[in-house]
Length: 116
Length: 145
Image (tube, rainbow over the protein chains, first blue to last red):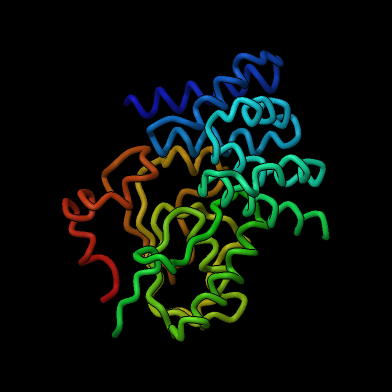
């Protein structure tokens, strides 16, 4: 039941942010990327990825704070916006191997999308 | 049959898990390349979530596999196995998987060539890769030998 409530909360956050433009609800979605529950992390990531470019400012904020890296990089890779390539490159040589790997993967997918 | 777990060593196969069709297409090619580079033929593939999509895409690209086990795999029409290239295909899932709900995929395969096993567990996408769940429901007996 706790999982169901947690997931419902994410769907509500997404609706409040996406449809009513309540930024704090969007930030709550980004925070959920750091949940200890794999289900919650996955749902938050999918909801942000499906929001496409609308999610970019929130994710860029998180990048600046190094919040929930490397998951934020993975979501940015999911969006696949070639305009973000320079930002993704900044993390490709990160001292954290997990962050650098996520940045490389995001770059690979984004660059391939840009070629198509 | 030699058992080479793809997650167990430094040279393990992994894919980004990036949530896009492009990422899965890249991963399918990389899986095929990884297996060829390790001289592994007809691998027994145990996959979770869109990892199953990656494996099914790889069979569409020409990868021959042994049995293919799909754990909590979202159902999308573009991700179906090439049944001429796979062994038995088994899908294990929970009831109303909330991650699949967010994904927008179907909750169950309709193709009769895929054996579905639905566990008496609600909502939890990660349950199917939990060793305790495998023990409780004796899932070792559900998957092909």
